[in-house]
Amino acid sequence: MDYKQQVAAALSSAIDGALSTEDVYNKIERPKDSKMGDFAFPAFALAKVLKKAPQQIATELLEKIDQSQFEKVESVGPYLNFFLDKAVFSADILHQVLTDGSEYGSNNLGKGGNVPIDMSSPNIAKPMSMGHLRSTVIGNSIANILKKNGYNPIKDNHLGDWGTQFGKLIVAYKMWGNEEDVKKDPIKHLVDYYVRFHKEDVEHPELDDEAREWFKKLEEGDAEATRLWSWFREESLKSFNAVYEKLGVEFDTYNGEAFYNDKMQEGIDWLNKKGLMHESQGAQVVDLEKYDLNPALILKSDGASLYITRDIATAIHRDKTYHPALNLYVVGSEQAYYFAQLKAVLLEMGLPSAENLHYIPFGLITVDGKKLSTRSGRIILLDEVLDESIEMAKKQISEKNPDLPNKDEVAKEVGVGAIVFGDLKNERTNSIDFNLADQLRFEGETGPYVQYSHARAESLLRKAGATEVSADETIMTDPEAWDTIKTLADFPATVIQAREEFEPSDIAKYSIRLAKTFNKYYAHSKILEEDDQKSARLALVKSVSIVLKESLRLLGVKAPDQM
RNA sequence: GUCGCAAUAGCUCAGCUGGAUAGAGCAACGGUCUUCUAAACCGUAGGUCGGGCGUUCGAAUCGCCCUUGCGACACCA
Image (cartoon, rainbow, N blue to C red):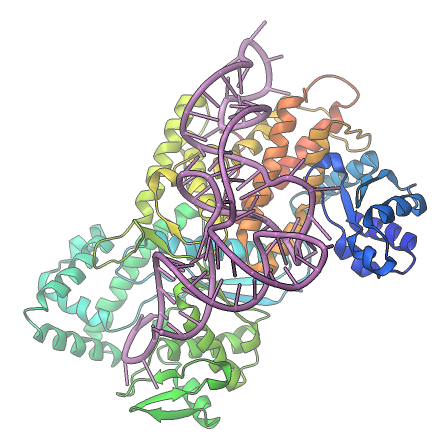
């Protein structure tokens, strides 16, 4: 039941058409302090129409309004404050949560539409850094949020597994590499080869020619080149998967750049057929003047393909395979201009799903204010950060809860949860200057705080044992319980908002808000006390546990029952 | 140079489609564990919302200008 709608209806009949019901609905706001009611209507908008002082309007409106369905209505200055009937509302919300369980807040706005998501996308033979973390966890959370909204997300790891660097890698491996090293620690050694190659080719430029040759062989399907390439790819994937396993992220497809390598001609033909391509300085470009963008370079002057050539192929492939309701790309904000061009080209082509392409940028991660770079060695290894966080969690457990069963599992959930939550907590597009100490905080507004709140709730439910949990006779009069219930009621709208904005931080902030109101409630009442409200209190605790767990799940964070 | 993004407490950030005295967390200081997990709770202190002009009954929020920082600007991805 939409209680705001109820307020709007009551208001609308009282003001007698001076403002449309829709306008009234949109003007209704939530007071900052719940002492000022649950909903408020500022009378300013009516002042102009009625030519009266807003204070006076509020007072007069109070006389006319039907107050029967509210606990009370007050006029405070230019505001009209509505207090909901706590008993009815509480029972209603708790009932819904307990009935729906983890389905609470789900909707079918997506109607099962397919949504491929381009995410994570590490480069073969390079380590995954904190930058990849962002794309991975943001993409994963958006996938969860989409599913909650009735879509069918398809997580696509668009691997960087093609390009001239593989020629270099093959040359380097043949000169300095050996199989055992690569098997032992693939990324470390492959990076070493790559870096060494770049050092040596300064004095031996002939290495570059060799590399070009090997890449050409690879493109032509040469047996040895292909064998090495697929072996490097496989070993790299193994080490990526170790990280994905820790993060608890799975993919539906791994259609990297190599996958699209033989599918580019269709896009080029399409562009030619539409007469969109023309030559400029020897290269093939598409003009995008009407989009106020620079021309997009589609083919190099030597006829070779570019990133955009492959992305056009990707878009066509997705269009045909999925008929996507939305087509998402979770890629760093430094590529904003590029994606504007890509979308413009696809619109020009008339690709059916071009309109649905959404570029979902996220802010850059820097160290000491500078961009990360593999070659310069300014890099933060994701795996190491995760391990440190897990260690930290282990330490906390042995201090605070040494008797905890399956400590290692919980330490992993909490340690990884801290990192993932920390990344998702703030607005996507904020850039982050990396600071390890910041990442390893477990107190205050953090993942472990929300997990801890959930564990507390579960602990209460365990202690309550067989006690009946019932929302039927809820009389939640204390302000802490009331705030918590109202927060529970906000979850479905938060799920929708997070989907509309592709913004996991909406969920993260919500979970902190819920954890906070619950902890306050916890500190102020004796939940397990034997009286006639015990089962109602447990209903609240159970509801909080359900919604906290579900919020964390949407973020890709585990919610242990004990920690 | 052009375009884009940002600037809010010492630090990291919230601030919903403009609305009631600008809010959290961390750090600082003080209080709360013989009873449901103190990874918690309560309190104190801390701000000319980068600067200016404008729109409005009302601006951290919208518009313009300036300053500072970051990023992007065709043959990388």
